[in-house]
Length: 203
Picture: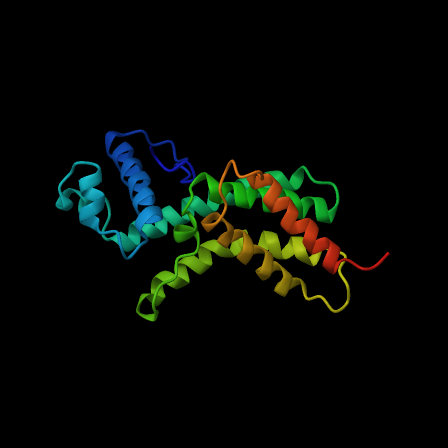
């Protein structure tokens, strides 16, 4: 099954070559999510779709190029779902709850998607790191704005709070198990509500 969180291109192309490209990206996303970027080779991806490694290079110059395109699509899809969720909220805290739910549910839909959304490359892959950071900036700006709009105690720093919440949500897929009594929605909302109790001004 293809990765549901890899947003298809919306450029109107429907050629056989473009369909093959989409298939390759979906399979690469699955493999990277399962095995990590370093643990996935171009040969692995080619074998997963029953083509020769040389044929894969006809579509993509390198594994790094595939990751950059996959990452952009994943971030675009997460951005769309989070923005839609925010628009349904009325208060700043409700908007943050909705955004946290949308973010966490997106991670749970593909259990190890954090390997793609938050890859950690060594310094020699600095060029990839810069492209990844640039792609994430618009998405992270959404959460910066949400936390900046919260009514917090004077001693609470919004940026520190943002990093704490997103860090917790990004790690949660490693321990969260469906059917354990709490849904993904429950977990995300609980994170934010606990945060509000500890950080909002006293009435």
